[in-house]
Image (cartoon, rainbow, N blue to C red; front, side):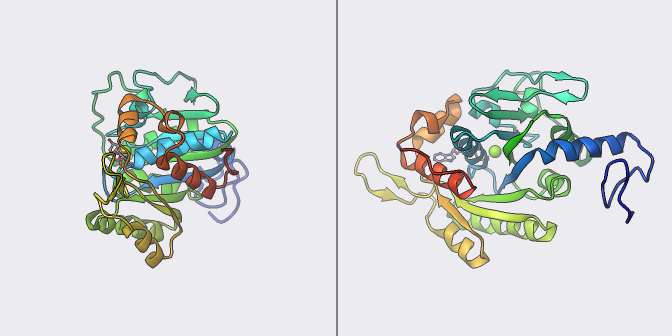
Length: 288
Ligand SMILES: Nc1ncnc2c1ncn2[C@@H]1O[C@H](COP(=O)(O)OP(=O)(O)O)[C@@H](O)[C@H]1O
Ligand SMILES: [Mg+2]
C-alpha cells in the first residue's frame, strides 16, 4: 500500500490494510521498541568458530564499560553460546504479558538469548525457518531493551534464516563481518559480503580474528591461521577494516568460564583492540 497507515504509520508493507489487528499492533511496538535503540549491528560470518560470539560479547562489554547502554541479542537459535560466555547459564528471562525482560549485567548491558528460555542448556531447538523467524521477531518486539545506545546481534554462521530475518525486520542494522585470515574462512566471508549487498544491509566493517599469536616462550609472533588476509579482503571489497584481534589463550579461558576478558585482562593486546573497535563504532576514547 502506498499511503501511510493511520494506525501504525508504516508507509509500505503494512499488513493490516487500514484495520487495526494484531499484526498492526506488533508493528507499532516494533517501531517503538527499536526506535529507542540508536545503533544496531549484526555480527556475522560465513564460517562457524571464527569468533563471532567472542567478538559480540567482548564488544558489548567494551561499549558498556564506556557507559553506553547496550543490548546483546543472541540469535543463534541452535547453538546459543552467549549465556555461557557471559557466565549467565541457568538464568531465566522473566516475562509478563507481551514483555520479556533481558538479563542485566551492570553497569549497562542487557542480554537476551534463546538459552534463557530453554529448560536445560543441553535442550535442542529443532525448528524450521518460519518458527525461527517468529522467535527472532519476538526478541525484537517483546524484549524491554529500553532507551539504548547500541544493540549487538550475534548471528549463527552463514547466510540463512537468522541473518535474513534481521535484514528484513531491522533494515537499519549494519553488519560487522568476522573472519580469520585463512583462505577457507575468507572464501566463506565473501558470501556474507554478497548477502549484505543483495539484501541492502550496510557493512560497518570487517574484523580479522585469531590474527597472530605471541609465543609465551620465545615471544615471537606465530601466524596460526595466517594474518593479513582480512585486511586485504576489506581493501579489495572497499569495506572498513575494524581491526585484527590476536589469539590469546585467556580469551578461550574467559569464554569457557563466563568471565569478561576485557575486565579480567584489561592491559592485553586483545583488550586494546576490542576497545579500539568500540571507538570505531562511535564511543569516546577510553581513559588509560
Ligand atoms: N582471539 C581469540 N583467541 C583465542 N581464542 C579465541 C579467539 N576468538 C575466539 N576464540 C575461541 O574460539 C572458539 C570459537 O569462538 P566463538 O566465538 O564461539 O566462534 P563463533 O561464534 O564464530 O562460532 C571459542 O572457544 C573461543 O573462546
Ligand atoms: Mg557463535
